[in-house]
Image (cartoon, rainbow over all chains, first blue to last red; front, top):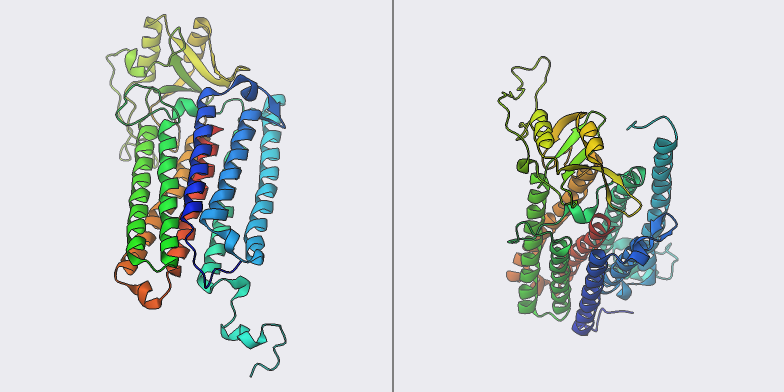
Length: 118
Length: 325
C-alpha cells in the first residue's frame, strides 16, 4: 500500500483506535479494582487467569498502537517483518529464560537450606 | 558507472542513494531500528523485574496497596485511578501526535502546529504526574520495621487496616546521633535518621495491645499474613531498622528490589518521555518557522511521532507490569 502520492485523511480511524484503547484501559482498571474471584484465584501455567487477561489486553493495545498510530500497516511488508518478528521472538526468548530461572531460584529458596543468597 | 549492478532496481541507483530499502527513507528506517533496539532494552528490564518477582513470588508487595494516592484526596485509598489517568493522558497525547502527522501529510501547517502543541502539553503533564507519583512513593505513608533477617514488618489494627508509626510510637528520652563521615571510622556514614528509633516503635507497640504485625508473606487468599499478638511481639523483638518511605537501599512496601525496579524502569521511561518532549519542542519550532513547508514534506513530524508512540507503547506495558499484575 503506497501512500506517497495520495494522502487521504485518516482521522476517522485515529479516533476509532483511541476509543478502542480507552475502552480496553477502562476494562483493565475495572478488573484490577474488582479482581473477580473466578479469575484471580485460578491459575494457568504459573499465573492466575486475571493476569493472563491483563497481558492479553496489553498486547491487544500494543497491536493498535503499532499498527494504527505508528502506521506500520502502511509500510512495506518487509519493513513490517523486519521490525515486528525480531522483537516478538527475542522477547519470548528472554521471558522464557528469565521467568523459568526466577521460578527455579524460588524453589531453591523454598526447599533447600539456602534462604537468602542474593 | 553502474553497469555491474544487476538487481531489478539498478536503474534506481541503489548505491547512489536513489533507492530506498523497504520503501522507507533513511531517517524513518533508522528510527524504526532504533525503536526495535530500545524495545529490546525495555523488555530486558521488564523481564528482569519478572525474574525477581518470580524469585520472591510469595513476598512481593501488592501493587494496589502501594499506589493508592490521588491528588486532593488525602487519606482516601484510591488504587489504580491516578495511574489510569496518567495512561489516558499519554494515550491522548499519542492521538494528537498522530493527528499532527496526518495534518502534515496534507500540508496543513496550522493544524500541525496545534496538534504538536497539544502533544507537548500532554507529555509535560505526564512527566509532572510521574514526578508526583515518585514523591508519594519516596515519602511513604505508614512506615515499617526491618528485621535482622531482612524481612519487613508492617503494622495493622484488629480490623487489618494499616497503622502508621506516628500513630503509636512512644517518645523515649534518648539521644540518637546521625553517623557522619567525620565521625565514621572508615568512609562510614548514614542517611537522615528515621523519625523514630527501633526502641520507640517497640515500646509503642507494647503499649497498644490492639496492634498486630503484618508480614510480607502472601496467603492463599492473596492477602498479606497477619500475625497473632504473641507472634507479633516475638517478631518485633528482632527489629533492626525503622524504614520510612522508599530509597534504593530499602522501602516500606516490601522487597528491596521492588523499589529499585520501580525507580529504574519508571525512571528510564520518564527520561524517554522527557527527551520525547524536548525533541517534540524542537520539531514544533521547526514547523513554526516553516522548515517543513519549504521542504514540502512533514516527514520529520512522522519520525518524531514514531518515537512518541513508542514511549506510549512502553508505558502500556509498564502500566500492566507494575500496577495491574
